Length: 158
Image 1 (tube, one colour):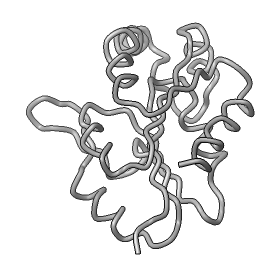
Image 2: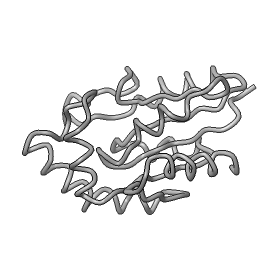
Image 3: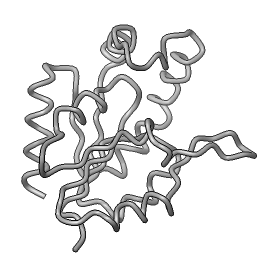
Image 4: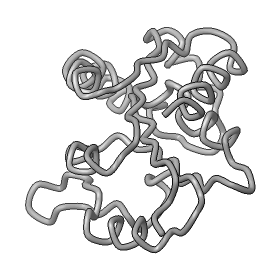
């Protein structure tokens, strides 16, 4: 038996993926931040971070009756869209993203100038592509519990 629902949370750094993911964890749901696993590999030639599709697919197929929620934002994530019940893009203003990145303690990515500039470029260039491929888009500038409620409603409805 395959897992019940498969949800992908995606978006730029600082939009709240990890926070929402941690709030969704319960006895019927497996939540995985792919950035913190061995499901992400670095391409030797391009140095690009990519999801290890075969490894992830093997894991997904091993799950029985629990919901699966993944959080990630990598170049090849479109390859897993067909496996998902829903793809949810979380988005926020640059100001909110910067504030969250500066406050977070579990991840330093984006705190230095070059990384922040890359995030700004990604918001301009990559986020529109994410939005085009999404089933749902949620603005996360507001209170985190409101964002959680919106995500939870989508999960309950798919």
